[in-house]
Image 1: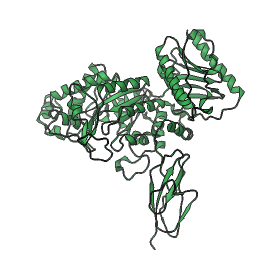
Image 2 (image 1 turned 180 degrees about the horizontal axis):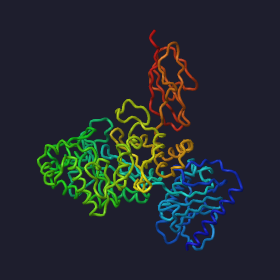
Image 3 (image 1 turned 30 degrees about the vertical axis):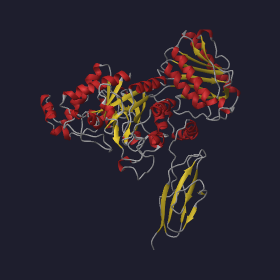
Image 4 (image 1 turned 60 degrees about the horizontal axis):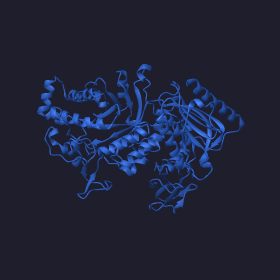
Length: 620
């Protein structure tokens, strides 16, 4: 079989080479994000027609599933309902005319578990991979090659002819979604799984428990959701609320199973996070006997770090956590379970007789070693169940458990130390990967956030340069963290996009392939794809070209570059600009102290936030 498959691929390459010689490149731009490892433009196009069929390798159910998914994507994009037909690979010697053929090939180091080969020629399309995951990623490439236009138009059905050999740089390409601070609906979580898959990201780190809410049903401890999933609403954005005025929600175990199965169909692994020994006030509100003081507690309506944590000297705490994690592991097949382990105040432990007795019995020097004892005990339990523990880089303090993976968030020092110690690490420092931070200067957000631009994330390097080649193998990849303190569900899109596109390319594409100018060009086209997906991405507000806002006689008000396809509307009387306000077309002369407000408007009706400036005349 191997030789026949090899002949088929060589035939596809031969057809491609012939097509390349026939004509110049087509008009359709190729703007794939993340950029493929290797790509060659071939000229001409393949046009999807009503007579086009999708052929899938017979006898391999996973390939048929991907082929059916491709048919669904084509129908959604183009309105064409393409049949999916079985095909015996041994019967083929070349790509069938007017067909898209999906099949598996023998192991190939050039593509690995998630890579693929894609050949589009005027006669047909060949998609080959070692594993079904590679075929699925190839489908995402095809989706991006289809122009985001009205499905009834001829242009929406044309694929540019290309030859691609693609594979990911890292095996961990993820995003954290924090549903602890703000609950997000099942449909919303599934939508984000689709968006991750579209950009070839393969991990959803699902943050499910916090001081502000417990979001997963645990059958043995019903109060976790009866009590812990709800808090008194204190903000306008905490909607909807129940009859008692509480805000919150949780996922039933059936809903979790549904979401996990959906993610599996999209080749996305969900890694659950159950926070311990801190960030657990929602659990303590339900079961106060698990604390050092006995409570009572209420689910916290405030952000920040709470002093109350699980009692490290109480064996009942470990029984509780093992029970919880047992149910969690039954729901999530992921080889990894995240336990948090960050921001654990030691105040309660220092004053707790049980915790102090534990330290004496275990010969622990201080509360930092007590935290390490706590984490090691949980890691030992998870390991006994065949799972691997992940914790934030605080778990390095006091000694790292033997099989732990570290997620480095307080800079990259944790990543460096972890890899050098021979442990796996995920890079997600606040400096580049915290996409809850503003995308530009925002005086309404806490000072510690600063801001992180699209360009800054694109320049991120997940592997510290100080590591040896052997040590660098421990860097699994990187993850963008979408914490939700300041972003309930309606605001998530504008925080995540377009920055997640940059992280997708950082983690998928070869380092030597990275080109900020080329990425910017492709992003300009990719915004149309995001529009088609209904993504409410961030639109930068207008910025003055000059940082100076004071003048002696007059000021030439000039705005910097406008967002792709947008126009700036402004007012000079302090009122909010609308689509009917003055349109900025050239510098505006200001001769008196003036309050300017400006906003960018896009042709699709979307708009940026309002930017405000006070242009002041210097006192004489």
